[in-house]
Image (cartoon, rainbow, N blue to C red):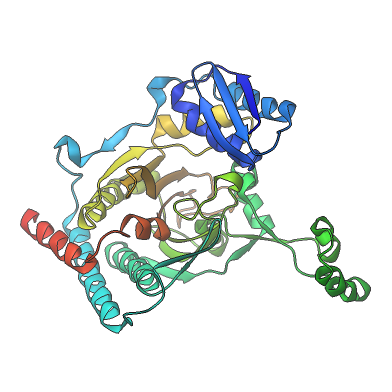
Length: 407
């Protein structure tokens, strides 16, 4: 196995970022070993050393000023013995009602499922899962659980969205600047008669697939990188005071060599809630949602933490964007321990400020510019965290009993 050794000075807390970046740009990497002064890259075939070195140097330069003191901060960890964030009476009532319905849905599903049905998770290819039997039922029931909570606790309006967005909307939202590395454009088949008629012979002859673009039109749409991007153009011509929308659907992120069939999927299902309002109002909602995240994790019996987090930025402004996220606590994740002992982010709460409101011209009824915030639950990851629970309805009943005792 060819090995490439590269000298680098990078703080240990940024090793995961370097790992992710290298695996993204060079999916043929099979193993990475890092120390304080060296990265050793192992691959099935020799890699272009100059390009690998360029990625390492650019990532190291982008993140060089990030210090240990600005690492992720634990917001709440039940293992510390501290009191959980206070759940409002209104939210507790909504959560109990949604959980009771979830138990009923799961009981109904268990009674309806054939004993010899399909497996729960059926990996189709790397990054793509098919869910059968109990997996499909659980995925739908968990989605309905979150929808019912947001509708009852926050008066959310549900909107059903397609799997793609105009590229112009994604660009207006700033996603080309912050997350273009994961985008998947939708390129329809050509309408030119001669090219169209030549496609089938080309394809069936199994010719060089690099020529495929010759038979496709210029793409105008992008598969959803995030569901909340649908929300902002829908409300740009109406007041958004205290508006809450909830959305469910597929998201698509091509993470290249980081894809697997567990927590890194190319297509995955999200349930999101998007909040609009003044900065003061959203600060209160933020406290409520943090408490809800902890209550949901307790209800589901997770071993978890709530912690500040950052995205992995690929552009040259990564350092500035990281500082902004860490200093303002604009991103809080629910980190859940799964069967192999690793922790994965099951949910993410994000304060946007006016990042989306300004490009879409959003306004409150008094003419001021609102702020926005969203929370998203990765349903595939919730399912992964619950995969080894043999009696999920029973576990939920225990969680409901704990909520009643604490009320």
